Length: 489
Image (cartoon, rainbow, N blue to C red; front, side, top):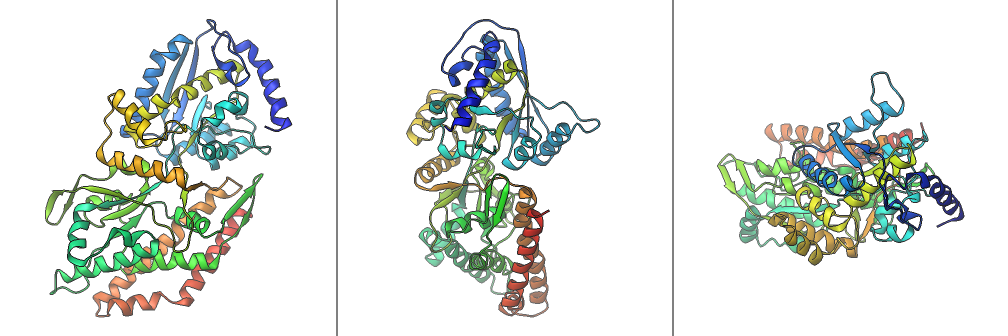
């Protein structure tokens, strides 16, 4: 810890003396404890959870309120603001005191981009004052590091549940394909291998109806295309966004961009990849694809049956190792919103932190993880044997799919570099460009290719009109211009 951080901790600890009566144990980050009874404190949380995820979070809050909260006169209430975008808008409107907006809550879920914007307004609490170095060391190092968005490395975003990406497969359909063609899962250790396998799957499914040409099926889809850019570049030794103190250097390597073009755009316009539903699990559910890369937290939505033209039929899932771009190192995305605490009284800040500490205790975090699909954040809880023993002790229902996801994710986290780009001015817009620029172009050009094929052109001829050096160069030039414009506003 640097001298600046140490002095800030000492100053904060002095201020927290008045909070001792309200929240026993808040001095863990200052080197002491002071239990006593205090005035009741109400803590409000805003989040973006919905459906089963919101139910899981509500259960956790009820548990806290009935136990540690009751012991410390703390009552927590939580309110979903809708989608992530809705939450971000509500937070920014409240932070800017827009007409009709509510007061900011004591805690709100936030990705680094939004927290970075709000932090610049000076209304977030520095959490270093509440977590000792020893306490912080209990968490996965990169999770804590992601939350250090202050100009001097202050901790403003606290991890409560994380995720990475996972490669999921409809094993039932895969087995039929593999038996007929000799395809092997080992062929898909790289993105290039997935592209080739997708081509073979399209050709095989096309051959099943010899009287109908070019009716092959797509094999694969991916959520969060921006991650392919950011993580793929990092795997090959290039950091697209190198941010420091809010400033950023952009490094879009042309050779990496060509690999992404060849392993997303080209197979997409060829019909080997597909993206129709809101998420790729939706596409698996209706039989449009049989494999996907998505968040580990989305594993709870991977279907147990597929409903297609032939009706509904059950399927089994399989989790495969995450592919890398050929020649790349093992780098996996680190994602998932953390929680930030708004500045208030020492008592209220300390009460908010009491909840965050409780929520991330291994047993509590695993209880949330087992139902939500998110990964726990402490090192102790990121051990497969410990996780499953704890889940069994707590009587938790860990589905077969979630079991496989947890096992693969923990193994990869222990061996792979976890990476997420730091927030900077314009980072939200820059990520949206990576997310939608190539995806929208691929979707539009796929429609054009399909029209050409319907008009009598061969698939190779139609694709060849779009898969050109000139088309790539035009897209790459626009990508650079759009990204630079976003970060230089």
